[in-house]
Figure 1 (cartoon, one colour):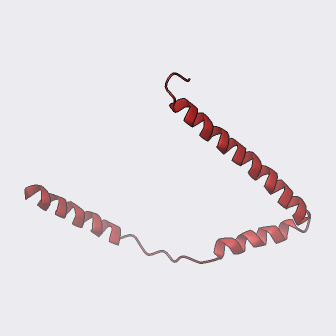
Figure 2 (cartoon, rainbow, N blue to C red):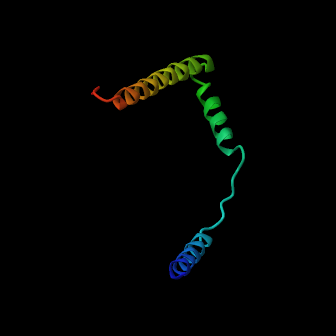
Figure 3 (cartoon, rainbow, N blue to C red):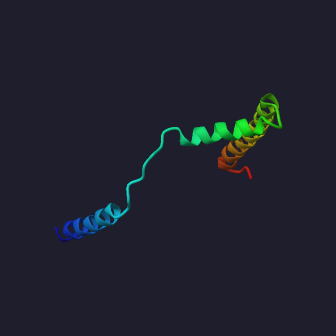
Length: 82
């Protein structure tokens, strides 16, 4: 009962601290609009098809690296394999 009271006091203090944090306004498509603005500014000196190919190549390298790291993580979990 004493521990429960102490935890209730601690929880009330934490709730009070959380209430001090201001509310944030979440904008639905703000980041997406910024991304579109970047693409339209890039299209003035580079065709969007070339940009798409470059992003695709970059993403494929990133996915290969992620897959390789995942496989190596699983292999390291096997006993006796270093």
